[in-house]
Image (tube, rainbow, N blue to C red):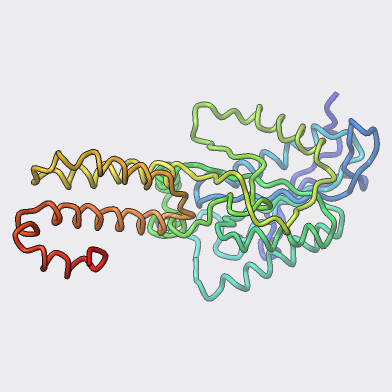
Length: 324
């Protein structure tokens, strides 16, 4: 039987960097069905993703669902949302770089306060820099709190469309800038998401995800971050990066051959492109740098095989120090 009697939802003061909270009429703790006992009163759920990716929608769903998969007594659950400090509901958010350090500090302070008070805390923020995620997980270590990382991996193109539909609450240029600077997961073993979800995908089911989340939390109530590990086996990249090298490198090659009779170079170009596709850029800025180097490679290759280079090898070598 689902335990619904004690549930109350109400808005919190936005200045406190909180949005909505589920309160229990009695204090409670996180319960493990497997071990048949109370494990902890606290839990940190960290969301990460681009603006307009669906993070807030997911946070609200998690807030409403978590008590349903835990037998009473239940802890209180709260969403910590720094957007409350950036702008008002239904109005454009004001992202001012000079304000962000103070906002991040306030987020950490509020997260600390609620975890110390025994809450389950859902941090609904971009967390696009690895350092942001590190600070929150370091907090989990210091307070001895289990955690869960959820990467909302909605493609950039979809985020821009959703942002437009909600009235450009955030300038699209800003979303694109954040996408370019996003430190995607995988460079360190501690920085691996437990769930990667794309709310725009036809394969995504909110009900299935919430069920899997409850099962995961039940099995991992004792897990803590391990910051000593410096390597990771998996780099999780969003479609905007994962496909960017493939699509844009094809476009560059197409433009390269458009006005040239250099089909004889296809084998060499294909080999170089294969090496390019094996790289793992951390963000879109690194992706663009790789593509610029690829374009330069093609230009040098074309000049190498041009009549001008063949007729004047000295000039070609002076333009390409590596040939000297």
